[in-house]
Image (tube, rainbow, N blue to C red; front, side, top):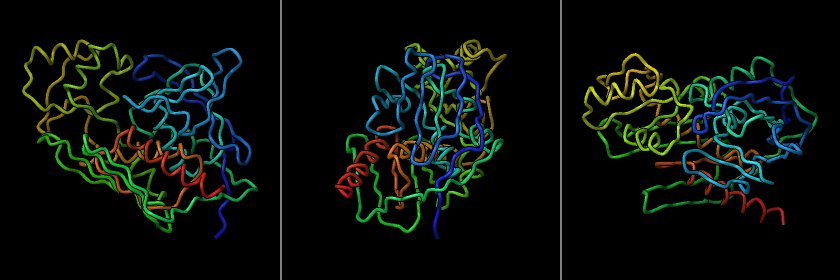
Length: 307
């Protein structure tokens, strides 16, 4: 069955605040011609520099995936890219008037809604896949991370997370058909442990966090004084720890929402390969660094196949 490349029917904008920078801005997704791929354009900078959504442009993976080129940076783009890949959109120019993609609710849901509002359209160029022919493996022994991709007729992702804590036990998530992305994966929000949140706050990060865009797991006993301080920092009247061991800022969409969000990140980060692939990914304790390292290994195989 022949598949054709897709782009958006018309431009659509999303507005919001960046999680780490706190910058409030607008991101506009603009239809692009066949074989354009996904590119970012910083319209707030002199010369409007372009940064291609390619793994060779990754410059940091500390608290999200950051791209950089020609003096322009793009922070936290993985949720938007996951939405594009999940809906089968190949070609788009993404214009930003800030350097960080809005965090919105911490998932891909609002990006999906924006794309569906304008719709997508098939183009007159065939979508070419890179078909994985042999296993590609990445391991970080120190952090206990393993990721691999093996031959498969379709695109599948399986994720397992295990952080050795009772409050967030071992979880699994899977996506074996991209048609399931919208319902099963896109609403799943990012998560953080309380001790990580405290570290980020002390280091002047999560400036755009407001407890409405992340699941906060509490893996130690917390005094009411600490909870009151958190409430004040995030402009909430009060917060408390729920029976599930999470703050009461929100309710889980799925029991395994954290694992599903990690899968969302894998999908978004692997979009940086620059072309659709067919293969079965198995990820154990994935993160942005491991995701992009696997993407680099896959990209190397693609380059070898072309030469």
